[in-house]
Picture: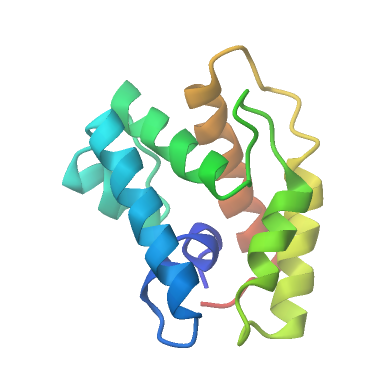
Length: 139
């Protein structure tokens, strides 16, 4: 699974996730999108490891990651929040969950974060994808 897709789009689209979780996530995604006016291309790109380039797209990414508790509202990585999201995916293989927990721990130590929480979202997003690839997280 693509790292971000594991946490965002997999939760919103696969049938085995509890209905309440899916509905809440869909609501959160739509609210973030309408708040920040992210383009269709940017929203779709996030699912295939293409970070958004516009400020609106970057802030949309921050919004979804912070609403999912993967990031704080201030723009820091929240590894425990990410691990909690992973526990919400009942059919995620234990081996893949452990790899993703390692990703969360590694990305919580990213030192290139600045004051712009939207830019930080892209940095964390890129870290999650890079570390997932390096650990061989399966799709």
